[in-house]
Image (cartoon, rainbow, N blue to C red):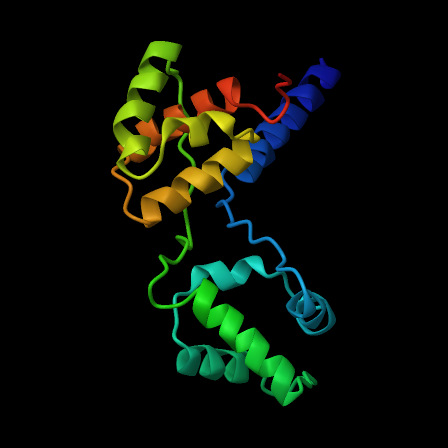
Length: 184
């Protein structure tokens, strides 16, 4: 009987912490740029933080300068004038005022019903063809987490996506039929 009590307590903790881990907000996935800028970022930025945080902002060069100055106050960040100019150009171009900042908090809702192929394709035909050819979508292979980031980014850029629950159904369907694990 005592073991049953321990099992119940252990299961309750596992469920609680499992649900807590599931309810973490998603983060953007920013690829490292190529060329000299890559080295500047690797040398000066990623030792303390990732570059994904940049995607939470949409700032011009002046505001990026202010943000970096304020965030690094009292720290030993020594960018040369040339390196700083390259970094600020990258930030203001990639995450400038014309970009849509990634939402600071998007918690994927738990879904209990799922799209079938007909419903998934129908949603793609309506939503994705506003900006893309469907071939582009069908050529993409991604994991559930990556599809979630891509779809949330598209919504931030103005795609007419449904409410969070139906959007999550579309994301789940895409991860099933356009999985990174599919081989042609």
